[in-house]
Amino acid sequence: MFTKILIANRGEIAVRIIRACKEMGISTVAVYSEADRDALHVNLADESYCIGPAMLKDSYLNMTALIDVAVGCGCQAVHPGYGMLSENPKFAKLCEECNLKFIGPDWRIIEKMGNKDEARKTMRAAGVPIVPGIDSIESIEQAAKAAEKIGYPVIVKAASGGGGKGIRIVNKPEELENAVKTAQAEARSSFGNAALYMEKYLTQVKHVEMQVLADENGGIITLGERDCSLQRKNQKLVEESPCVVMPESVRKKMREVTVKAVKAVGYTNAGTIEYLLDKKNSFYFMEMNTRLQVEHSVTEYVSNIDIVKWQIRIAAGMSLVYKQTDVRLHGCAIECRINSEDYKNNFRPSCGKVTLLHIPGGPWVRFDTAIYQDYTIPPYYDSLLGKLVVCARDRNEAIRKMQAALCELVIEGVNTNAELAEALITDEKFISGKYYTDTIEKEMKAAERGEGALFGSGD
Image: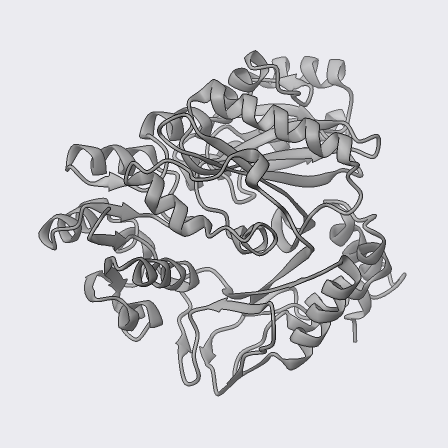
């Protein structure tokens, strides 16, 4: 087992990894930007080092600085968390070259699955259902012919990256050229790669993902699915496990397909395969996240398996102690992402000092966060303040538990979306399970037309 690990991240995920390491008796090394000097992860780690100014490119994305700290401190491994460099094959390769174990899959797998075009081809060859489309857009003329054949609406997507960047929905032919050009520009700016591919745009679909753990000795287990369909601009707001509308026969098939996909790419460590599930319960491969997910906490509750600890154990060469038949999923878990933003004012980011903080408690309630009272939220990073997660025997109880937890959560000094989260999880669409990836966008457009308030959140 490792004795010292560098955490190449910040915020709540850095805190989460440090806690797992402490419980495992592993020393931790934190890195921080000048803006994060007073951050919680800096104080919790055994050692902490400043690696640059506030901007991400000068600090948390500075591969050389990260490697220098890891090697200089005698670390054996690097945990990238999520976001940042977690799906960057160059960083994973650099770790390998410097005799540091990258806690995640091999860099070659990250590279292969990070390219959406290559991922689609790989999944198709493995017999995984794929959304109809073309693997690459070579020209506007080629894209136009393909779109006519596929049938509008279509969606163009960046071949690299994620996070909702480089994506455009095209409803009619006259929109195609502008969509391709703007998606290319955004992809080039965000990922350094302007390559795009095209798929049929499926409406009234759910975003369902299957969590997997795979060791380096051939062991593979799935830990159930998460419904992540409540999204705004491709950013998840609420996640739950299990998916309430998925029949058991479809769940079983999705597990089998996921294992087949994992074996096909030789995947190891924690990963997630994301699918689109339509109203007829057909599902299609969307992408593979070769890292820890933000919403891993939901799966940990229903499976009673610590995913972060198993990431570390697998990276250290340990085999899974579970077989698939050992995995018993219990109850229902729901997660609400609490962001520092003014959702009533076009979701404007909110920064400043947390003047009052009260975190809800009780059985099976957790708030994964890096904020504390009197902490000043810097303006340079993403808006996630924390993840409020609950678990209960059944879904109705979980919804009530989440509602109570949201009512108890107090964060003063900055604006948050907690009130919106409560409206979302008590809305009839969520309660019935009949919500889709476009539900929030449709509600917002209806509110703009004066046809109703966004889940009761309007003035």
